Amino acid sequence: MLRTARERSPWHAKRLVDVDVDAVTGEDLAGIPSMTKTDVMEHWDEMVADRRLTLELAEAHLERVASEGPAYLLGEYQVVTTGGSSGRRGVFVWDFEGWLGFALARERPTFWLRRNAGGDREVRRAFVAAAHSTHPTAILPRTFAGSPQLGVGRSFPVTLPLAEIVAGLNRFDPTDLFAYPSMMHRLAGEVRQGRLSISPCELNCGAEPLLPDARAEIEAAFGRPVMNLYAAAEIGVIARSFPGSAGLHLNEDIAVYEPVDAESRPVAAGATADKLLVTNVINHTLPLIRYELADELTVLAEPNPGPWTGRRIADIEGRVEGSFAYDGDVEVHLHLFRSALGRRRQVLEYQVRQTPAGADIAVRTSARLDTDTLTRELVDALTEVGMARPQVSVVEVQEIERTRSTGKLRRFIALASQRD
Image 1: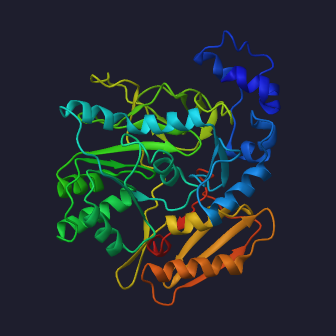
Image 2 (image 1 turned 90 degrees about the vertical axis):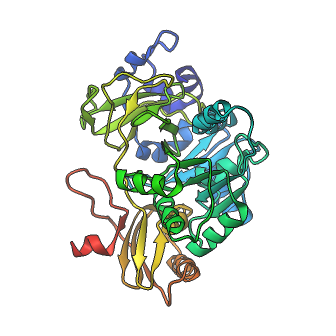
């Protein structure tokens, strides 16, 4: 990774000029400055290792995908967007080998469970996650749709009305189910109410924190353990949980992980780190070397139980977003807002504040934004999930106030927290 970055990326060549890339070890990375999502977005063209790629080209590709459906950029690259816990929009490009590594790291528990079940079983996989072809939870299953090991039988966008998702799952009767934790929790409630009658052999959650109370209710409803994953669109699947082992195991063959404090100093196992520095070694097209993820986490000090490998971390409890609840028993998954805002290249940062009838949205932009079209799109989406006469306002601002203690941007603010 370092050799590729120094040879093909002008931005990284300057950072690595004094690094012996043929002799470097994981411990030597501490001598390289860290990098952020802001660095990526401000130096994108100089950072990519394929000189044909530009941010403008990637953004134009994302706009075509939004209107025409999934496609490879230049016939070989996947392009994804993310807002992340920082609230800053990012655009990331993956080469195919890296993308395959992303998928394989996601599926390790599945392979293990199938092998130990005593033979091949029929697989009908369902995803209840992102709908738009700029998010990994939507693109990964489509990329490998032809593979029974990696593909997916049906996708159910979380932006659909819950009753429609339930009816579709009942018809499909999946053996394997993936959903955002907030949605899996709602599906568990549908099982208890007798409206959802599926009995999947395997349950997987990701993209949001899986909190202990929700996990307990999900497992009680489905009668199966939940396997949790911690991932980032720009890094891949960072860690996975496995049956019989607490916490999550780091996938240490796809990246080098450095838990650090706020000043980027190493944090020992057993102590909580303020952020995680990640060096992704599987995606050589957009080298991320000591890339900052602003998630608090704790590396567990206890020994690993066999047969699992990789250091273990405690369950991630940050970035809780879930959904907004409205009168009339209407729940709106926050992906509805994330998807619409994340697709627009002009949006640098945003904050969605729930109102009794909809939402007030503040956006910081790099260029003029068609707020009228965005507003109509969100009103139509809210109407589709069951809200009567939703009201949405979108206002461009110079700055969005951040949390003083962490500097993070609260992207979604529910009515309940506003009253508190």
